Structure formats: C-alpha cells, structure tokens
Image (cartoon, rainbow, N blue to C red; front, side, top):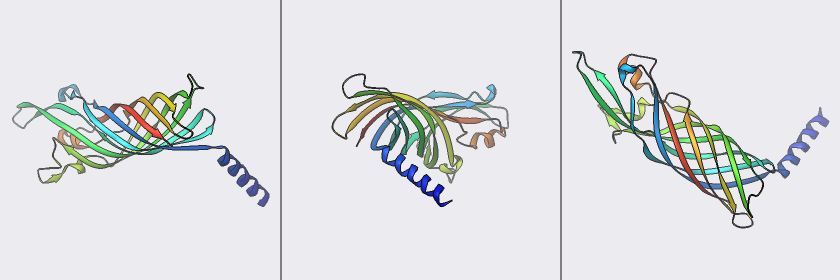
Length: 219
C-alpha cells in the first residue's frame, strides 16, 4: 500500500510540474436576453436585449501543450426586458413588462483547445463547457423592493448554463498574453418561480441567454 501511495504521489507531482497555470483578468460586455417555455396564451416575448457586464478572474490549467482546463470566478449580470399578458378576475387582459436584471457569481468549468501558431506569437482557441452560478443581487424595473418584498427573493439561488466560444490569444512578453473572443452562454435552468406562482402554472420557465465579447490579460 505504501508503495502504491508513493507512486501516486510521484505521478501527481510529476504531472503538476509539467502543467502550466496561467491566471488573468477578464472583462465581458454581454448582450443578454431571455427565452421562455410557456403556453402561447401568456404571450411571453423578449421585448429587447440588454447590455450587461461581466468581470472576473480566469485560470487556464494546461495539462498538455494545446489543451487547458479553464475555470475562474466571474461576476456577471444577466436578464433582459420581457413582456407577457396578464388577465384579471374580470377577464380583462393587459400587457405587462418586466426589465429583469440578476447578478451572479459564476464558476466556469470548461475545456480550451488551442491551435499551433497561426502567426508569430498568435494562437486561436476554442472553448466548450458550462458554469455554475449563484445569485447575489437582483432588480426588476430598476427596483430592489416591490410591494414590500425584496425582488431578489423571487429568483432561484442557483443557475447553470452551457458555454461555447472561441477567440485569439497574443503573446505580448515572456509571460504576458492578451486575448479576445466571443462566447455564447445558454441558460439550462429556470431562473425564477415567480411566473409559475403568478399564473398557477408549473410549466412556465424563464431562462437566460447571452453572447459576450471577452477581453483579457493573462500573466
């Protein structure tokens, strides 16, 4: 048993010594929207996309020359302006509008695949994976409290999404790199139970969508 343990420790140490870790800062302005699963009678529609912002730390852990496990910690705002139809007890219908903005702390978990140099000091990369997100703040129609209730309570604590992207990375110095890319974020989980309770319909779900421009500096 001791020999096996020592062998495993030796292999882990060797793998760690061969691996390369790059840490950097990332800024991600995002065109954010929502999509819906609901019956047509509710008339859920995305009224307009919103420009939201993401910022945080990225960590690329290279386990081979052109392959990296990418993670980090991001603070990202999501949501857009949506409309739906509400019918009161008298049968009168009216169109309602909600401007949703939810802030999350994101833990991305993805794989980055790098090409060989396409020009001196220049690589292309492709990224696929997802993220686990925890809400930290929320507003609806620029309000944090509606009808004496905090807006943040209507949103689910956790959200998960898939991401797919790509970009280009430039070597600027011995250990400094800059990168820029485009990433699609597709929400996988319902972000709140508000509309289910409002209409008494458990089949309604609202999910986040977004496309971000990613700019960053790695050290």
